[in-house]
Image (cartoon, rainbow, N blue to C red; front, side):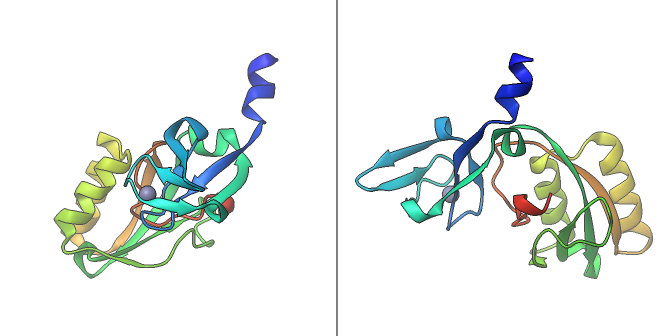
Amino acid sequence: MLKHRRENKVVHVLHCWRCNSYSTPNRYQLKDGGAVCGLCGDKNPLGSLVRLPLILVTEPHIIYVAFTRSGKHAHGLHTDLKTALGPWVVFASGDVLERALVYLGMTPEQLEHHRDGMRRWGQGTSKLTIQPHRKNLLRIDYTKL
Ligand SMILES: [Zn+2]
């Protein structure tokens, strides 16, 4: 019960204007009238602080990643496979996208499926379990999760 209450708690999360990541209060620093991102080190205005349920930024999320052009263009999709969670993001190559997906938390099973789609068609939709406290490489809007 106590845990349940804690997870529903709404806190000030830093939505970094440079790296787009979401940081919990223990991962950013209030300094000189701004908030310093723990992931990229950039100082944000206090307007980058947004009130979000703590659980939203501390738990893994399953999303889908649609990709085209041999993995050079990708964007996040809700599990409903319709709602775009972020813009199309351009990657230097399919390998760079793959490294990004692994960094974000792609499991070995999900990676195997992703590589299969890349090899066969160079486009597709791959499942991804995003782990918390990562740079927001797909520029996901967490309020749409
Ligand atoms: Zn940042």
